[in-house]
Length: 385
Length: 177
Image (tube, rainbow over all chains, first blue to last red; front, top):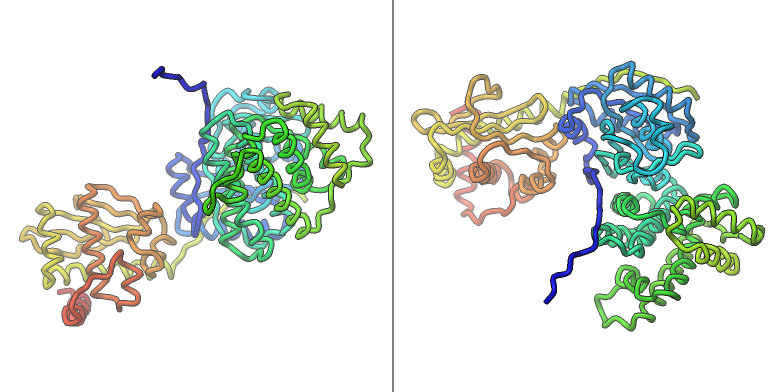
């Protein structure tokens, strides 16, 4: 039998994850292991963010850790904010960043990390893919069930500047149920659907078997737990599972090229209004249908996660592909009904505008996915209403 | 809203630290007591080297418990300060909250180990022996409903052994025999 060498593959995930009860209390020990002596905590601007900061500071009791606190980070991050945090970091002799929360807090932390590890000019120099020349200072994220869905990823943006590098991924991710309390359903659902999109597109990219366990775990957790959490947002177990799923999806997303639904959702969000996750919930089933029409075997591979395969013999490949598309459509339809998200109205967009959006999304995804499929996804979604 | 900066110094957890310190003090003396009358505990320690000393402590700065064999082979509780003692086995609990989980029996030693809440520095077989000793001491100290949470498997000891051992261990631990 001939020995066949596997194709070249690359997988990078440097993040250590601590998830579960009292996980935040492990922060001082883990930071000490990373050689950190004086971290800078960043927090957000909402009352919930201040409450979460209190939890983290309480968890540091008896640790002997000296730290600084900087914030609140506003909901729109710009260069002056990044500069101010970086100045505080450097002037006070900090050697690590701890982002308490998600969204712009993590976004700011990643950008500051670029500026303080090297020079502030690096923020201009390192734009693009894999342009960060060396390891960055330690970054820890104390995750919430909210934000943008990019907290775990190798991606960050500042206005029109986009940075993508494995060095941006956090060194430490702490997922503690206490940080999930009080999360708004809308915010949480949007982030989870973004994570679902990341996971599904990573699974269907098919390029890297290392990604499979992450995508499978993310999709399973989301399908099992999102309905439970939407019905009862105080369900801490479901919230923890969803936060873990978002992290798995982020790791998978960081090892594939950004897919069409993901890119289109981000481009459409400022145009039609609403959360990118809500928009992705409309686009994702159309995407699956498009892929199933060309390559049903790929979509059929999702069937065990979406439909379950424990009890009976799986049907044929086309039936599994159709079943997977239907299951995804039903799941996301129920999420939209529960959340009161309107259907995505694309009728106001003419053909030229749609093409502009697809081209912008294609540039974000480095031109890997098919332009015609992107246009078809938008057209089919517009027809569905 | 403008960004603000402040330094932070973590507070203390006086009551939790005091509770854990008391528990370690009592468990240390209870191990000394149990080794004097319980055959199984003596057998576990006899398999360990002469002069064997182990510590159980909470990072980063205590409290701690040190127990070791003296020159005659008797098991002695040696306080909380290692000083210049050679510690052959160190079981460190990563933080005070993990210690609270352990000493309020929300997690057994086995579960805490599986959840990476402890660090063991020393030979793994010695650590297993110490954990078995701790389990036996906890069976003596605690009623079954609580001890079942603390140990991996509640032993099928005769009731007489448990009750007589419980009286002995409490008296001897309190009096320091």
